[in-house]
Structures are given as structure tokens and as C-alpha cells.
Length: 287
Ligand SMILES: C[S@@+](CC[C@H](N)C(=O)[O-])C[C@H]1O[C@@H](n2cnc3c(N)ncnc32)[C@H](O)[C@@H]1O
Image 1: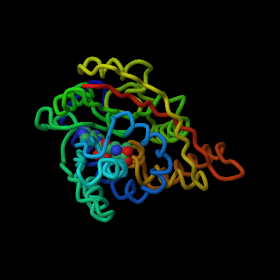
Image 2: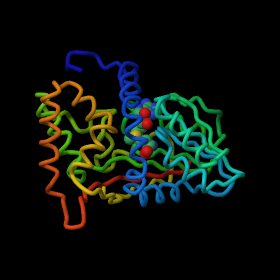
Image 3: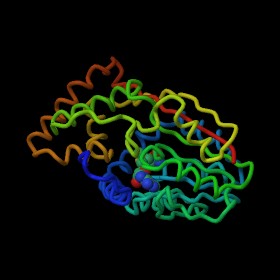
Image 4: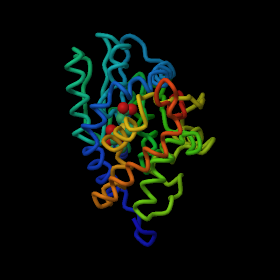
């Protein structure tokens, strides 16, 4: 978008839906790697939402459903998880994965996080793993979650922390932008990767949506893979922001950008494999 164009949230979300639909296969294929990468953070998120046997949970921006299935495991046969996402393609994988793992307590619903339209006070917990920062109006999304939660129940959300704490993502974004001839945009631009990373912002957002007992903690989440090449493959096939930038390049420029990313990312190679530092923010609150 150029700076003279007015921001159109509906167009922004249509583009997000389409680009995540294109990334859906890659994100799903990489589930085992994503699962290892986010294991500790996911478990902390589920604890912070106080998910118990028998709970009814809504999972916002559920993607291919990795954390949905963890929630389904915790709630057990007497509980229920509703996985929601703006992209029908990625949510299709969540439904298929739930069936494949024998969970009949999981349902899916295509929905914009800012317009969940759920019945009032109908859920015991809500979670959102790496999705809220993609909402151009995240307060609206938190208000929708607040509306759907029973009084006293909890929400927990994982987002990326500051760009300096996520150097691998910074390198891939910087390289893609360089090759596309674009400047580094405002990292806090709504709806983008680091939009909720400024210290204090997400807590204030929770408070503005009327949550209380709000806590935020930083969770290290190193991405361990065999090589920098494997990380570039993950990024190239599974992350909508970088895929969109790479899509602007000619095939030869794209190839050159990917090789440059790999070369810059080799600084994280260790004798036992590739270890990319990442940090997430876990924010939780009560309705
Ligand atoms: C990084 S993926 C995370 C998926 C999943 N929660 C996980 O951690 O594996 C981001 C997800 O946010 C979804 N998303 C982006 N904008 C959204 C919106 N406005 N409403 C609902 N989902 C959205 C995308 O479709 C995608 O599935």
C-alpha cells in the first residue's frame, strides 16, 4: 500500500486470507518442526488459559490446528474446542488433523478474529497462538473474545516480541525488502508481524478490552533445524508476509534473495545443527 492510499481493513483481510491460504500447505507440512519450536510456549499458553478437563475452548487464528489438538487433549472427551481462522484452506487442515488424530471434540469455523460472532458467555477459555498481531484492529478481536467468555474465565495469547529479539525473522524480512527495493516499514504497523511487540502495548490492549489480572511474560523459543537452508525452506513455503514480498520478485531475483537469506542465517549454525533465536510474548487475562 502506498502512503497516499487510505487503509481499507476489508481489503487488508482479504489479502491476509488469500496469502495464508497460499501458505496453508507449507504451514501444515511443517507442523512437526513448528510443534517442536513452540512446545514450551504452547504449554505455557494452555496453562495460562486455565484449560481443564471438560472446558469449552475457542482457538482464534488456529491455522492447521497444532495447538488446537493440544487443547483438545487437555479438555478430554467431555470438553470441546472450536478452531477458528480467516483462511478456509488452512482451517481445512485443522479439521483433517483433528479427525486423523481421532478427536471428535473439535469443530472448525471460518471467521475473522475481529468478527467472531460467538454467543455471549459461552466459552471457558480462549487461546490465540501467533495470530493476534495479524489483526489490523486487535482490540476489536479481544472484545469479541471477551464477549464469548464466561465471567471469570481466561484468555491467553502468544505474539512475537520485538524485532531485535527475533533476529532470524528480521534477517529474512530485511533481505526480502532489500531485493524488493522497499524500505523497512514501521515495525508497529497494525496487522504485521511485530505490531504487538512494543513493551507494554499488548497489556494495555487487554485492559482496553476490559480484561483484568493481566500478565505478560517473554518466552524464548529457539527454532532448531538441521540447517539454515531448512529455515529458508520453512519461510519460503509457510509464512505469508515473506511469501508476499518474494512474490513481487522475478524468479531469478527470488532465487538470489533466498540464497542471500541462507548465507546471512548461517551465523546461527552450531556444531549440532542450526539454532535460530526467537522470543515470544505470552499475555493472559481474566474476563
Ligand atoms: C502464523 S499462523 C498461526 C497458526 C496457528 N495458530 C499456529 O500457531 O500454528 C497465523 C494464522 O492467523 C490467521 N489469521 C490472519 N489474520 C486473521 C484474522 N483477521 N482473523 C482470523 N485469523 C487470521 C492466518 O490465516 C493463519 O492461520
